[in-house]
Image 1 (cartoon, helix red, strand yellow):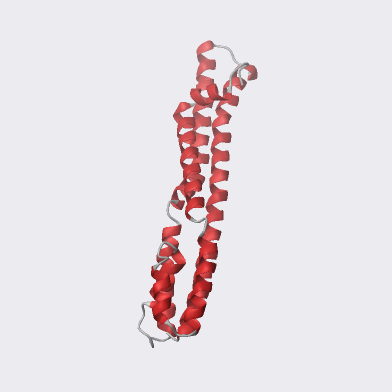
Image 2 (cartoon, one colour):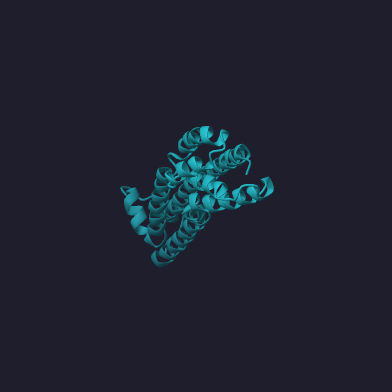
Length: 207
């Protein structure tokens, strides 16, 4: 790295790849914050809703259970429970399981909204960084050819600058991958929780 060259200057010099990487990092942070905000109360709301439905479900009061779910339609769990309660009585547990599976799939897709962006960033950022490094090394050798002098000292500064692109790409990809996997596991836990309580609700009401 050339003496006195700041990290911002290095990013500016490798603008062809570092600018897209900076943009991807901003988008990734926005997605992570949005998903944290959207999923912040899902677990607590599911438990609270299950407790509220316990009394009418154990007494076969489908009408009260329906009213409670309709008042909480912003909750994914409430929408899953509502799909179960909307089935005609006597359809059987097999039909209820099919309804629950369909409702869970719809809700899981909603909860996974924008996660494809994190997956794309995690898979593409290292390659963008590698491209920046390759371009930087090519420029270093071109400059050496123009100057007409060689040696490691001449090329080292340019290569060190070029490697910043790879480091930046790997850093962004690692963070995006961590949060992508975190949200996938968390959403999977939520859908499992929905399934357990939805089946219990159906059995209580003898759907």
